[in-house]
Image (cartoon, rainbow, N blue to C red; front, side):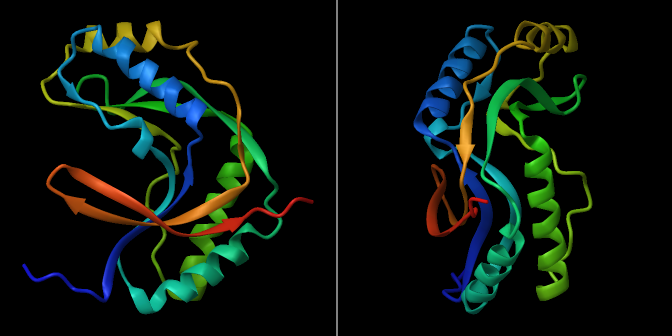
Length: 195
């Protein structure tokens, strides 16, 4: 299939600082010791996705930036932490293991709702039809896991959480799919304004 140079695969996300990347790497190491068969995303590539676009025309990038600037108005700098683990889609059919978030998640949710509303109103980009669930993917399961094993892991890591990290900006990423996985490149950042 011919590549369209006018299109990029893109999303908006929060970057994860180095100390949280190390925490997630340590979490993966502990999960690997349980013997589950999975692929392990590189923590350095992890980010907290706020809105995924799929393919967008490069001519829309300025409009996307304007929407992001509008969306962050009134959203303060806030703090989050990586916390415990969960699974998608269910304990009986686990495909993904993720670390959730704690902290000022109400501010994060308000930011995501503003992004959804403004992109719909200003650019007619459809809203997500599922509730925002902030997470960092730590494992993609390759072989089925017994539900009892999943429950044991959920219990074992229920009090596992990182230090807080500060969210002071959101970023627009380009994501290129290559044979070894996705390569993410930051196109621009939009700072949250201190009150």
